[in-house]
Length: 413
Ligand SMILES: C[S@@+](CC[C@H](N)C(=O)[O-])C[C@H]1O[C@@H](n2cnc3c(N)ncnc32)[C@H](O)[C@@H]1O
Image: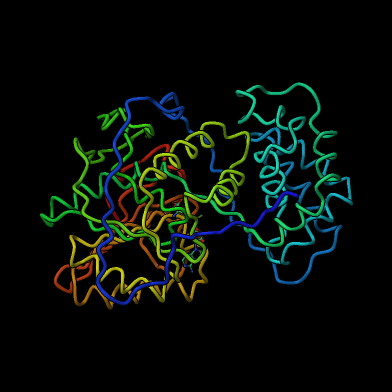
């Protein structure tokens, strides 16, 4: 019997209240190149980020059918497989009903599709796997995937119900490191200290490992291009691209639901949440996970607001404390977002800190961060610094939500 539950986040521990030394030995680099290395330099992909927020009232099957029809329409231009499957699911009430095992707020079509993708990745549905572009070498299958999908839903209905009841969609997008890198380099230069990194909403902690990846800015420099994971990033504007990685002394992640990179059930779920049509993204995640497994990141289980202060105070003793948040604070209510800023403001009165946010202004109103007009729906890279108690906040750039491009603002806001 397939079991969806695993020893999630075995490595995680509760948030500490005292000084910790987070540094782990750095993994050796291999000279082989990843699938990501073969990406074109300017893949101006549309945003694939979906922030599903449904009301707590239990939806009926008619409403869920409407949600699948809507996904079929919106996914059509960029995710033909999920568009096609969503259309077919919408007309099959028995399959739609599987999603009712999820908590009301989680009843998003993408959750059911992630559950079925998880089963496909676990190898129980080879007839369906041949239709998944991430598993069939990118072949846009001409034959109809629906009969094999329907069969999987019949054969594994209980497994699907168990997955949607216990999991929520979760991602970890390593490409965002390419947008952080120029800021880290500038901060290390300014402070004369190595980066002590605290990543809030870290998921599996993959963006903590920015010094193990390679980067190919276009136009611009290539850095550590012999890494197993090389991140391409198209650049516009006068970005201060570094010619070397900033020194990094320590890194720790904080997450309510951390993912342990050594737990294959947990990482399979992370992979299952990537849409199969996003082939490069899927393989990039696989490559980043194998880099991470060689020397797993340190992750603390805890809440962004309640537990960040202790980690930042520890970081400030190890190097220059840099907090990052990327597509994480949109999970908090506006009130909690404001509390997050207040917590950092309180720490910043005592120690020098920098916070680099890659968030969507329209989804993080409580942060009240500055952004140029017309950018509220984009990912805005913002830097807030506390130096000797004095606060300064600047919107630096807009970015692709997965870091495929960076547009440096000519007049930082
Ligand atoms: C979309 S993922 C982004 C992960 C990562 N920052 C990245 O850029 O790939 C959002 C993460 O925030 C975490 N999260 C949500 N609410 C949180 C909270 N209150 N405290 C800590 N982490 C939280 C989720 O568990 C999830 O791992």
